[in-house]
Image 1: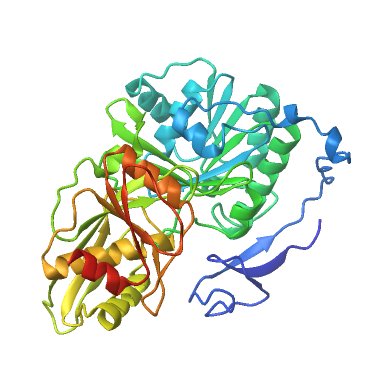
Image 2: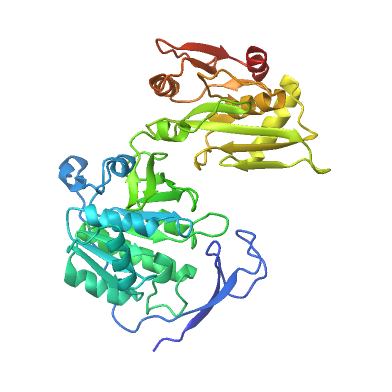
Amino acid sequence: MAKPSTRHVCQSCGYVSVRWLGRCPSCGEWNSFVEETLQKSSGGVRAPFQSVAKPIGEWSKEDSARVGTGFANLDAALGGGLVPGQVVLIAGQPGIGKSTLLLQVSDRFSGKVLYVSGEESGTQIAVRGSRLGIGKRDIVIYPETNLERIEEVLESNDPDLLVLDSVQTIYSDKLESSSGSVSQVREVAYRITEICKSKGLPVFIVGQITKEGNIAGPKVLEHIVDTVLQFEGERFNFYRVVKVVKNRFGSTGEVAVFKMGDRGLEEVEEPSAFFISERRSSPGSVVFPHTEGSKPILLEVQALVLPALYTTPQRKTQGFDVNRLSLILAILEKEANIFTRDSDVFVNVAGGLTVKEPAVDLAVAVAIASSKKDSKVWEDLVVFGELGLGGEVRAVHFGDIRLKEAKRFGFKRAIVPKGAEMGVEGMEVFSVSSVGEVVDLLF
């Protein structure tokens, strides 16, 4: 038997050290190193899946034929459905509905499904299935946490779809570290991916997240899989958003919106109507046409500016980067004479969606100016554009698509960057070059 080797692994980033360290030199986390014992298997090494080399013209498009998940908007977000052998990692807050979504996908899937659960018993899953009205006989539930036994059942059942819930609960006998450790997560993900690629078997892998909202385990987990889905929304609200963070078989930034009901998750056909349905025209409210993928969504950006309650003014955001807010406040003060240094500023993207694209900068600036001056903007107005540190409004992508979506929902006016030549019939478009020009136009 080979002599076991001991190493220390950072549980935040996977950095390996021969000795324990108080602070990780890679990610900077403190007290994140855990000792792991790696015992090499005495058995033979399993040969990995071997592909063939062919010219690009000889690869048939049939190899990438897609199969549906049963949810039209989820298929659209994935680029048309699941590709054989596609490995999809879905992550989100505890209780957000990941297991519910995958159980419904399993019920609507056209073939045989193997549902491996390392977190719940078969009875618990069956009770949830009964509540959701799911009784499909082609769903095989297998409560197990041992990877080697899962591989055996996978070979004997030969399913058309695999669901693994969750990767942090599965462990391999080849490693002596506990389940959820960096080594185990990496090993489990690699071996499941290898098997599913060789069989052309699509798989959904559930991933847990850290308190910061990042996917737990090594960063290599996100590199191994083909697609990463982020399940967002408030646990105690009825809306859920599946956002495509990475996709080798389609575009990123796509979203699928669901509503949580008594019978599980239901599709929301018109996300824009959903996000602005409860909007009330008031100071600090601006509509922003958001897009990172191919489909735009109208969102309401809200700002609230109040006299500072404490000595140090507060800067709070929901769905928007708080560091970006500080830049916008500085730009507004210098270029538009909107002073907030003695005020509390709160910014919220209504609906629970997190917006990272710079095109939202101008909408946030207008919302802050509107709240500070206690003056409403035009009710039929949409705003988008990136802000530079000099106060200039920079062009952004998909301008025409954003305007067409706004017009479809009755918006008749838009403030857009001057550098982008765009226009939609029936809409009054104001092209601006600076944030000061926007403030003068509206207020």
